[in-house]
Length: 556
Image (cartoon, rainbow, N blue to C red; front, side, top):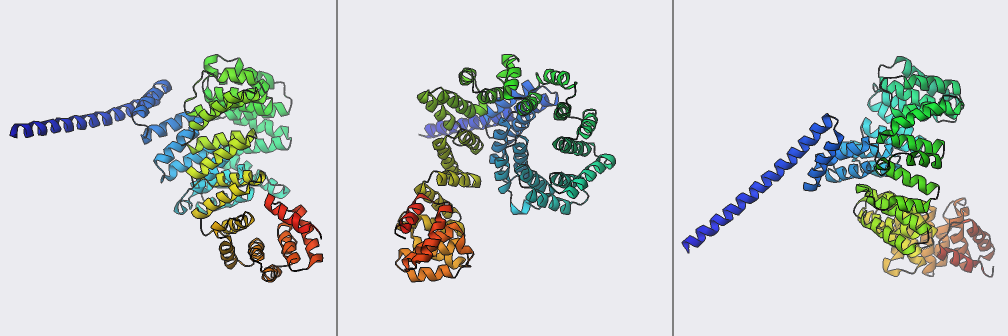
């Protein structure tokens, strides 16, 4: 027995030693691969950098440094998969402001403003009082069509750091989009002053870019040609500056345009980042067909790598070459963007009436994106763009249930459900949102109304309506909901008293007037009821509301 105990102890010791040795080797291997990746990157050996990172991530997919390097590499190559990598970094390091803002910047670079907005919404209150946050929030707001919000953010950045010229330039850019002539003139002067006086070359170039864009908007060829020539002559000019030069040449019908475009096409053919920018420029300025023609002139190896593969597919969709799109997408592998390849293939197949094959591809797209909110959002936008209502709703429900912080998904789903008249699903969504945000007056009020319309007494709509009314009795929508609850409880006189406590102007709003007319009829005031119920024709209503008011109008 003593020998047996010693043998077992020795065995356990050897196992522990072996496990410890394995763990030590595994940690060493990861460190070694990361060091190799960094060394290769320093030598600009991108191929071997990617190989080392791929091996490292196969060993440990949660290695933060490796994920961060992949995000940087894919972003530098202008591959949309950079969004997926940035999101993965933030998932691994959710409290990092730098990683959160890096995702916002990447989303801005790829013009994915919903992702930028949602990511900014997750910034902790304590971290919002920074120049970096306000600069990115301002840029997102400006690009999303909210110049007032942008100006507020840039103004706060100036207040936080008055000596920093970047927010001041951003403020000038906002005013450059103003319809006020004085604001426009002042913004142009401010940007020209930056070019003349600033020692920051990057900032000077940004001022030039904005002045070129402004000149192009107002057909000022002299200014656009002058500043674009200055811009491309700068030693630190980037490829997109050359595209601005093309804009100026094309707008002025300059004979140099075509030969310069041909030169830039040659330059971009072997550089993924430049190719991405040039193809998007050709799609916007020339045509998707012309962009596709150039892409198809490139070697197949180039066309099947990102971002060329995605751009080729987008062009084929634009020209409705569904069979060509199907043939192009089959037998490829888009790595982190596989979900998008399957989604695009589903579209190509459906357009050819190959419904079963399309459904199979769409399911593969869903399977590849279920646990990734960036992928789900991208797939959802495709479905919405194609007017695939059922698929859009399915994806939005997945996001709402799996990622409670994605507020825009709930808003989008609300719009889809309202447009389709699906009140019961809309009530279900509102109930979920209210559980997550129990103090929300709007959600409480909406849920009470829908539960009454559907007779969902298990949700206690009368109690909800009363609680909302007690919270804000002067809110017309809340008062109308509470009055309707009294009406349903056979208390028409009390309901009328609630409605008549509102401002008379508020009673003329179609959505409020409809309920006021209903309650007037219940109190025997038929002439007034007829007047107010007529306004229901101008209201945006749920199907159950329309039926309710149509029935009330009968016989008046």
